[in-house]
Image 1 (tube, helix red, strand yellow):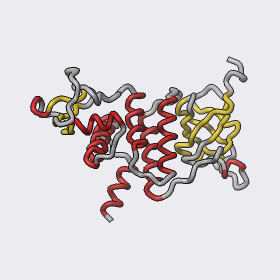
Image 2 (cartoon, helix red, strand yellow; image 1 turned 135 degrees about the vertical axis):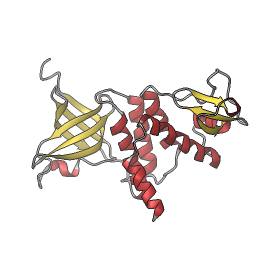
Image 3 (cartoon, helix red, strand yellow; image 1 turned 180 degrees about the vertical axis):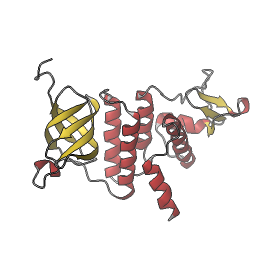
Image 4 (cartoon, helix red, strand yellow; image 1 turned 90 degrees about the vertical axis):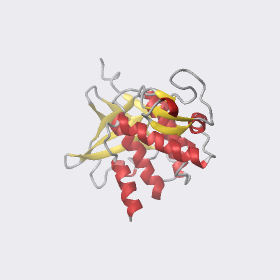
Length: 239
């Protein structure tokens, strides 16, 4: 493969995390629309006068270029595209929550354009001041679907249409079964599952149960490991 073919230019991306590498450089974990999650070496980015200091911003749309064929590519250029308000308060913490999910669950160098768009949509909502929106649940649903764990939200495990007035148990990696027919799985209303499918959270109970269900499913796929952002939420609630 030629050097030209190993170079990528003008890639839409977001910075998920950065950590020091040597005295002057950074390793960047980025999520790009067409190339998935990948690691980039940003040479000299820690130098006081580096032009990258005002460009490599979390939760902001970036345009990146890189080259290399190893596990860690080398950043060639970066441009901040702007146009999105900076996250603040609870919205900032929720942004870190989205990033932590991507870092822990998404394999590297596997493109997921639908997930990238859902992530960008969630950030737009959070930057606008929304902290409990359809975009956040849509991101979680899309993440599970892209990982191969798509949710069955309109039919039970036998293929029968869900009924809004019936209580079900949602079984991880299987789907919903009537509460009277099983003693395992998270109890949830049929209406909640249908509202989750339609991204309709006008019903406060559907909103609460959908959040609980997504937390239950994500915890399973994280092998029970608590997210750092979740731990911070709990600590803040105890203050």
